[in-house]
Length: 219
Image 1 (spheres, helix red, strand yellow):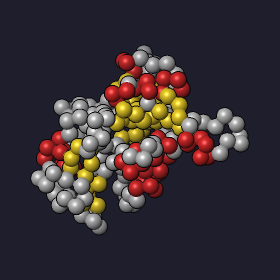
Image 2: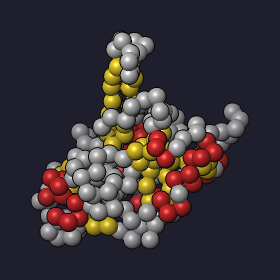
Image 3: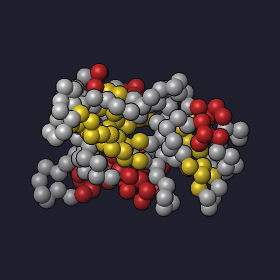
Image 4: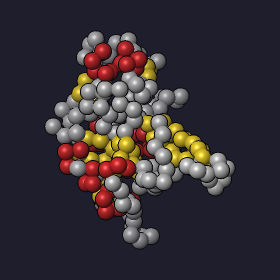
C-alpha cells in the first residue's frame, strides 16, 4: 500500500494562496471553508537580533489534513465513514457520514468542517480523484513557487515530484504540467533535520514541511 504525502519547501513558499484557491476551485469547497489554510508564522526576532527589521524572520505554513498514519478521526467515527483508503490517504465516505462531527473534534489540526448543506464532514482528500489517474494533487500542480511536491513515502522524500517550470517562453501549459522534477534535483540542498511535521500527539502526521537552518521551526 502506498503512503502518499506532500512536502512543502517553506523557504520557497511565498504565501500567494494559489494552493488554497486551486483546492477550493477543483473540489467545490463552500465559501467560508477551506481544505488548505495558509498561515503566516511570524515575524519573530532572529536569534540574537534586535527584533526589528532586518533582524526578523517569518514563513508561510499551508495546513491541511495530515493524512495521518494513526488517525484519531478514524478511531472515533461511529459509522466508519472516516477511514484509511487503500492508497493510505484518510477519506470520508459521504454515504456513511451522519454529520456527528466527532472526527472534527478529535482532529488535532482543525482541518475538518461540517458542510451545512449536505450535512457531511469534509476535508482535504489529497485530490484522490486525480492521483488515481496518475496526476498530482491540484495544490501541487498550481504552486507557482514550485514549493509543493507529492510522492510515496516508501519511495523516499528525495523522489517526490512537482511539475517543471517551462524551459522557454513558448512552452505549452500541458507540456509543463506533464513534466516532472524531483525534489532533490530542484530545490536547495537540505538534510533530514530540515524536514518537520506538525505537532504529533500520537496520530503520526504524514504531511511534511522543509525549513532549513536560519529560520526556526515554530508551530
